[in-house]
Every structure is written in structure tokens, then in C-alpha cells.
Length: 234
Ligand code: B12
Image 1: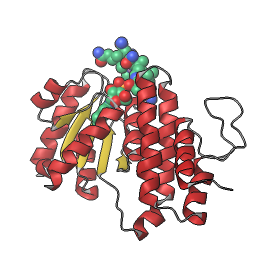
Image 2: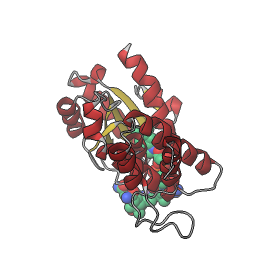
Image 3: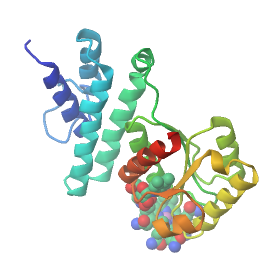
Image 4: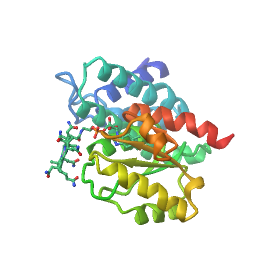
């Protein structure tokens, strides 16, 4: 009773920060089990209150992730907490899809991601994927140890705006280069913006192997994709 729309948005944001999807989930603090999580709050907001879905995304889910980023940078939360929050936001956006479709809102961008051939490290790629999804993008994760040819095939089939290549091994840089070369050879290089990331990569290196962009972490990846989306569409 008497709960305002603003309060619901604040409660959703708070539960994003705590990584709580449902009332059964624990949060960062004691005693949160049993209180409504993001799913119950969003349901109330949409079904009972008929609140604007775009507002829920921009004024509760997105702001929640911005606070998570600040907390992560300040060392107040750890990487698994960031992933939990991103998972909650990504799942909620997925569940809001029917409502989004009704209001004519589409996913912001489509991104295919892969860890390159010979490299089995996928934790970083997973974090990046979750944060990109939490920011409203559609992400197709091809997995790890992916051959250049398979990556090019995915670009051909999915027609993403972005291709994110991940690698942790020094030898992965050569595989990223090879993947970009294969894209070029197949005529798909200029149909997709290539963003690279991972331990052996830097902004300078990204440029030198012919990538379009580089991001140092998942939050940075969201910003890079957003800034490049405006250049893609103009
Ligand atoms: C965990 C780990 C493993 C796990 C991987 C589990 C998994 N499912 O991923 C296991 C145990 C399997 C493993 C195996 C090996 N590993 Co290992 N591993 C690591 C370790 C400790 C952490 C990597 C990690 O997950 N970091 C956490 C994530 C969140 O950070 P991140 O990956 O950097 O990702 C962030 C950014 O880079 C960026 N990012 C990442 N990808 C992308 C993509 C895009 C598009 C964008 C925009 C951004 C982006 O955003 C992410 C989020 O913030 C590192 C050492 C280290 N401290 O980095 C060694 C390390 C990478 N491993 C190493 C090695 C040598 C190996 C092995 C060869 C060991 C062996 N002898 O068997 C094998 C290789 C297997 C293979 N072929 O891939 C070396 C690589 C050295 C080198 N010079 O190449 C390292 C550096 C350890 C070391 N100091 O020697 N490893």
C-alpha cells in the first residue's frame, strides 16, 4: 500500500545490486531471503502497475548495473557478484522481451563472441557476454577454442554488428589475426566491427592486428559497443 512507482524502481535497482532474481535468493546482506526479488518486483511493476518497460530498464536495471560497476571499482564487491547482478539483469531483459516487442523496442546490438582457436579460457568472455546482455544487447556465445572458419560462418549466419574475440594466451593474438584475415578473405570483414579483448591484448595491439576496437573489461566493452553503434548507424 502506498508504494510509489519511484519506490518500486529503487527496490528493483537495490535487488540488482544484490544479485537477487527471486525472493528465494540471498543477497549481499543477511536476512534478504523471503523479500521480493527483481522478478517479483518487475512483475508487479509491469502487470499490476502497468509501468513503462523502458523506464524499468533505464531507471532501475541499468542504474543498478552502474552502481555495481562503481562498487566493483571501489573494491566493495567481487567479480562473481558482478556476474550475479549481470545475470539477473540479462534474465530480466529476456523475460521482458514480449513486452519489449509490443512497444517496438529491439535489442540494442547483436554481438557474436568467441574465444579463439587453441584457447580454452572462457571466464573473461563469460563476464563480457553477461554485461553486454545486461546492457540490452543480444549476444551469441560460440564458446572457446573456435576455429576462424567457424567464427566466419557464424558471422555469415547471424549477421551481427559486432564480433568479440577473446583470448588469454600469448598465442591467441596470432589466432585473432588469422580470424580477421579469414573474415577479410571471405568478404565479411567490413560487415562487422571486430572488438578484441583478453590478457595479451591492448589498444595498440588491437589496432595493429586490424581490429576495430578493444575493451579492457566488460564494462568497457559495453561502452565501446555503444560508442561504435552510433558510428555504425550514422
Ligand atoms: C583461470 C585460468 C585458467 C583456467 C581456465 C578456466 C576457464 N574456464 O576459463 C584453466 C585452469 C583451464 C587454465 C588453463 C591453462 N592456462 Co590459464 N589461466 C587462468 C588465469 C589464472 C585466470 C584467467 C581468468 O579467468 N581471469 C579472470 C577474467 C575475468 O579476466 P580476463 O580473462 O582477463 O577477462 C577480462 C578482460 O580481459 C576482458 N576480456 C576478456 N575477453 C574479452 C573479449 C572481448 C571481446 C572483450 C571486449 C574483452 C574481453 O574482459 C574480461 C572481464 O573483465 C590466468 C592468469 C591470470 N591471472 O590472468 C592463467 C593464464 C591465462 N593461463 C596460462 C596458461 C599458460 C594456461 C595453460 C597453457 C596451462 C597448462 N600448462 O595447461 C592452460 C591453457 C589451456 C588452453 N589451451 O587454453 C597463462 C598464459 C601465459 C601466456 N603467456 O600465454 C596465464 C597468464 C597464467 C600464467 N601467469 O602463466 N587457465
